[in-house]
Length: 40
Image: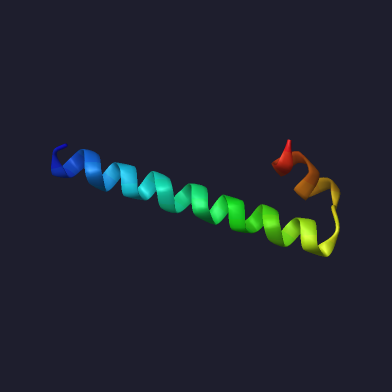
């Protein structure tokens, strides 16, 4: 894998991790209309 691909992959992973964390926080605090759309 070349460097550019690896960088893009890491960016993708970081974004996915952030999204998952946001969803987890939303579930803890109870669902609001905004978080419900994210979870879908």
